[in-house]
Image 1 (cartoon, protein in one colour):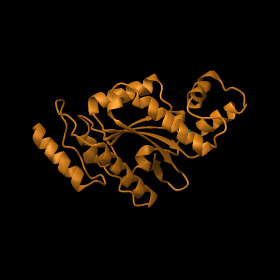
Image 2: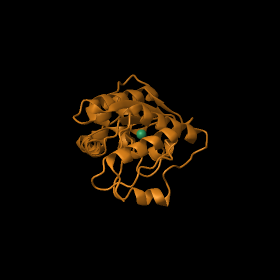
Image 3: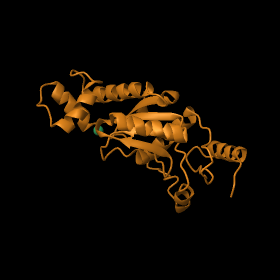
Length: 219
Ligand SMILES: [Zn+2]
């Protein structure tokens, strides 16, 4: 079925307004469809609401149906990009209570951004036009902790691990405690990404995930 652009945008906007908690499901996308216009405050609010559901154990698991899976085969319109740590305790789709096609996610130890991460994010910006990028650090991050250890005299790790430590070290100071260093690293990565072509058009925000409370704090 063909949807005109105006019909598609109207429908998608109506869904966004009616269901910020995430029941919104874009109409079937064909190769020529474009993603509906979204604003970063709307996108951020969806993440805030989803995190509140996760924290309060009222997760709605939106967009995880068979229908959503099939609907998103032809194309995706993620409303936010997320760069976070590879840590198994920090899955953004769970922490933000989202589903299929909602978040475009890159994960590396210490949520550092190398050329491939930057290229992945730029690709998503060019093709899906999301309004928001979140760089999400987390409580008790091993990569940031290892970096603080190295800065305070621990032996240099093997080369590929050192590449992570070296990247994190650019945003932190040896005298920081772990939480402060995690936040400083996320902020540093966010500033770096904001300076990149394509990504510079987005609202870029850093955030901190407390595993103790489940809360994500944006800063
Ligand atoms: Zn981590």
